[in-house]
Amino acid sequence: MSVLPDSTKAADKLHRVVFCESFDHRVLRAAHTLNQHKLAHIVLLGRRDELERAAVGCRASLQGMDVVDYESDRMRNSISSTLAELGVSDTTDPADPVVAG
Image (cartoon, rainbow, N blue to C red; front, top):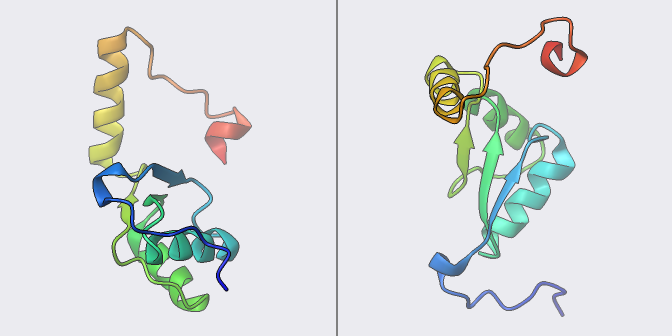
């Protein structure tokens, strides 16, 4: 008996789940399970090549999931444009531990 709910929901009614700690094997396995059973639309944050290597290591597949590389130049430009439209400064402090990583 499966503890997962019935996955007969229409794909367009699925909730979007974004995982920011995508390299953690537990997160990848959870994302894989949700995607496999069509319980949510999965978005992983990170570089695709690194995520694919991590997924192989924990026997998960990224097929059917979206991967957003938030560090790419295109994404940075998009974020900067959106912040400018909102009137928010996009300058960051490199000494900030959240920014510096």
